[in-house]
Image (cartoon, rainbow, N blue to C red; front, side, top):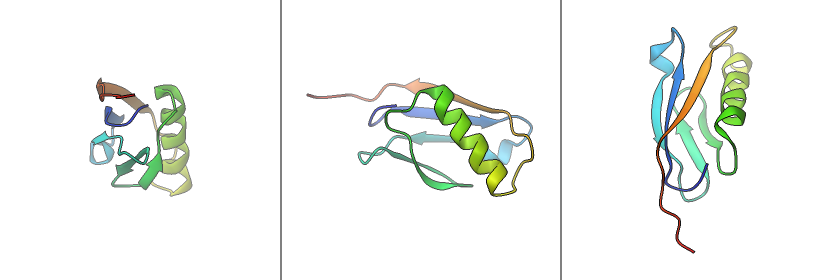
Length: 78
């Protein structure tokens, strides 16, 4: 993920945990159930794993099915 990328995060059968979020300039995203988490440099698969781990660790879902889709690319200026 890169700065300003827009992500659609879905948790199967747990619509209250779904979110659309943007990667902030510091590389984090904010999820209502997890707070800020580091997303910069992660692939969608690694971010899915990270979100699953957080959901289980917080006791919100026992066996979550998480999907992360990149819905809009942010602009990178170098």
